[in-house]
Image (cartoon, rainbow, N blue to C red):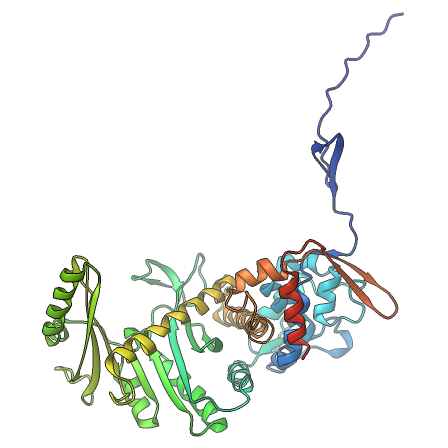
Length: 463
């Protein structure tokens, strides 16, 4: 009996769920597997943990919540779950689904304060989802609720604690941004300027410190609610620093009589953009002509500053106010700008007020971009309450990164780096984790490029 010889099967690159072959190197096979054991890609988060220790953030955030769970059946504490979400956002994990794997990560167990880090899993996606869906009262499934007024006060308190003594002045920057919506979330509204359905949250900063992150529907005026937010912030600041000068700074979307009148009544100064119109343009005709001549002579952009007392013809302003104008001529076109202010010319001459004070508000736009890099834009929950909590968690992640930047990275090449850059270059470090009876060893990659920055940040945070 004869048997046909089977033809040889061509060699193939093997790939299973646990083994991945790549192009051979120097005669050796290259095979990758997820079998390294307790290995993390986020070892730099130990610096975040030290920054959190310095400012005492997470325990105080947990105190902003009401927890109606029966303690006899609680496996994951509130502070532990908040730590998971806040550190996760700071490290680039935007979704609770990510924590189905991260809950086994020994480093995340360490960050969350779990006593048996890496041995007992942290909260999973369903538990974390119930944390975010609290409806303000205990029900069968969602028994944790954020007291927003406590959280708002905490943001201001953290700002005050960051100063050993009262500063000469506090500048409060106010601005809004759009958060696009792709579902039928509560409060959705089509905004004509942004050409999309969105939310329009209000942000208030003092330098790099976040003082307010308020989710709002896009159907409201940009300045809606800003007076009430500033009222509580100013009150809290003045309880600590009664004599500090406070300046409110914003673009023309906040130039409203209600806000300016309140500032004047409370002894709060302001510098706000003023939307240009034909009447204002006529007031700076001489300045524009001078700028036009300078531009022709030099071939470069030229600007001339002027100031005058202004009141509206409609009576929408209750009084005359100082307006500073920038008459600027670019190549081939005019670029006039106007700001209204309560600050006197003796304190702030026109050019200095515009260039050194008002234009600095552009830095706030970078701070808002950092909110988005920390996933403040992930507002896909059904209710505004749940989406406000997500905004709060992103704010906490920002406060943590800002504390690292302010306390640990001062004097390093990363002291002005954005949150996303800090995450990518400093926090994403591969490491092997080993636990002994007395120590948790985190053996980081020897080839890490910013080892010097890490060492300096550690030394400054441990002071």
